[in-house]
Length: 105
Image 1 (spheres, rainbow, N blue to C red):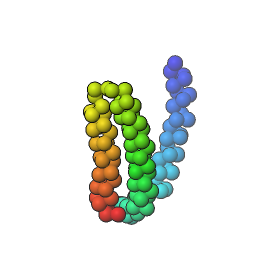
Image 2 (cartoon, rainbow, N blue to C red):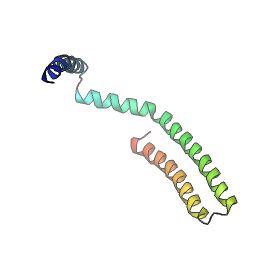
Image 3 (cartoon, helix red, strand yellow):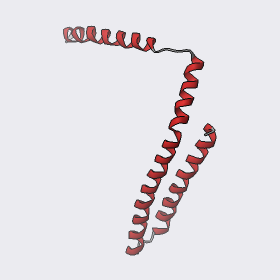
Image 4 (cartoon, rainbow, N blue to C red):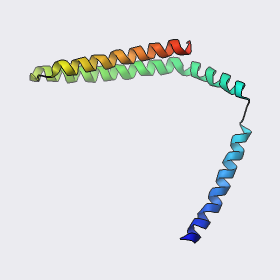
């Protein structure tokens, strides 16, 4: 058992050392890194917001079908399901709007 660990630990140590060396090659100053991260977040933010709206639309359609089926079946907790479905859709829209204003996009 110890022999297997020794056989595995040498290549693993080598891989770890190589990864640390590679990471240090990509290091940059803190300010430059933060500015680059901010630029990338702002660049992808509109796409992410559109994706969030698309996911909300799909969830909304699935929720509407669920509520419709419960309503037609005469289920007594239809109002609770409809309220939670509507609340989740509103939450998605509000989160996207708040994040846009938070990041200043």
